[in-house]
Image (cartoon, rainbow, N blue to C red; front, side, top):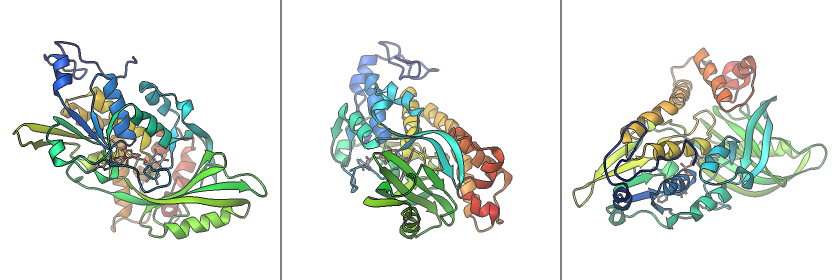
Length: 381
Ligand SMILES: Cc1cc2nc3c(=O)[nH]c(=O)nc-3n(C[C@H](O)[C@H](O)[C@H](O)COP(=O)(O)OP(=O)(O)OC[C@H]3O[C@@H](n4cnc5c(N)ncnc54)[C@H](O)[C@@H]3O)c2cc1C
């Protein structure tokens, strides 16, 4: 077992966290603490698997397939290859899900190297779920009363926790298409901020076998269908494009700081308290600038497993690990506010640059300042 894994409780002395120890019978704890995870997306199903590795067997409630062709929540399936380490923690191999590398990506005309790839996220979630006891419906109030701990892993719907202190969500629209080059080369991966009015961008992510996700998302825009049609029509000059499916979506770009409370308590009919703990996008573990949430949701699940039943430690680790998301959210608030003057401040540009570096995207500082994502419009305007 790797060093970063869940610390296994030992009989008589449970290192609940790396700093605290509680004298309780570990087997008793395993047997008596009843845990429900609500939502088996990437965060909930990954958390379920790593908890099971630590001897905690949760019941996992999943409301069922989404109204999309793949049956899962709309997503671009893009992730840094560093996700492989998290998969290995759950005994999975990145190679089994790897679709296409995105070693170089176009950012509004600028080509940069990236550590990104696309992965078969539906297959990954299916394999994680296959190891869990999935209860295929929503958690009812009556069922809920049985559990000492209920984990809210319901993503954008955040069904169990109280509402975020200051939520911010971004609408999206994504097509899946097959592209065959007619003359010239097939398109490569790219992100185009200058084509979306307001704060947002178009992405084109290759999925292998001539398949692509092409989507648009942003704040202050209400015509994604038109924007994507224009983009596809430009693209079709050198390619034959076959439309396969389309799904609308939404991403929580609030950041964990503004998605508090991350934990809550509820009194059950018996009078006992129930702990409610959020993980993944329900608590905003998504980059506010880029909408990347797969890796960060898995990281939040790992932090929860490592701080199991120590909510104070969990909250402080989440807020500290994702403090950069708070800053990105503050930039969004600034750019969205009526009182802003026309250009982003130095600190906003710096945050965009840092965002790219954090994702391993090799953009030169000056170019990142000038071109990164949809800030182009503000900077040049
Ligand atoms: C269009 C789009 C493109 C994206 N592209 C990328 C990308 O390329 N890379 C990236 O890193 N991130 C991307 N994201 C973000 C990423 O998809 C999410 O951040 C990530 O999936 C969050 O995982 P999660 O498990 O927290 O939530 P979810 O994936 O939303 O999972 C929540 C689960 O809970 C279930 N559920 C909800 N309510 C209930 C209930 N009451 N009872 C039982 N079950 C319930 C849902 O059915 C779902 O299975 C994208 C998002 C969108 C919308």
